[in-house]
Image (tube, rainbow, N blue to C red; front, side, top):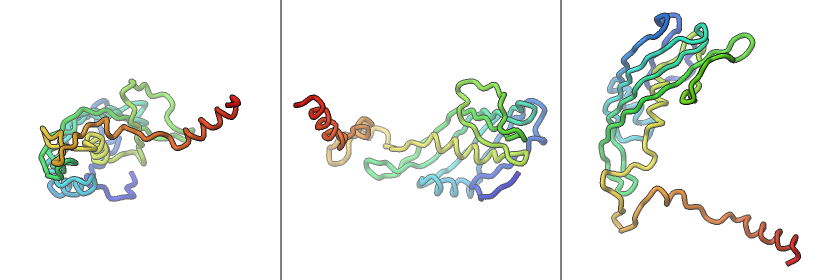
Length: 185
């Protein structure tokens, strides 16, 4: 298993070291790893990170399914008031990692529809810590607000739909002109 980049939370796992069917692991980040992950994700603080996972060997050890729960206690910075506030997050995840064979990627791995995340097994192993880190990053709120904080100090009401409002397409004027010319208007 080759590690080309230093990861903040590294827990290398070799497929040959896993139990025949399912291996259960409990992973907890150290304070130093939490600080490094907080910096990576742009958080004021990540106090704790824990994952309880099950790793199932699949396809004659050419794939593994990792299921589990990632839980964290962290500090966000409110996008409204810019004040820090603490939050707890906990969510289940499922991910399948595959390896390549001489004839290409593994073709026959029975996947349920929720197993969309596909990672790679390299040199007979993978970094479970990086799998956990990536799943944590997917749980982070992009626009965190303190509980009960819907209005900005200046009275502007912030809603998620505000971020989705789009301006009129600048090319729509050209499209209208084209349509008028085609219709002879």
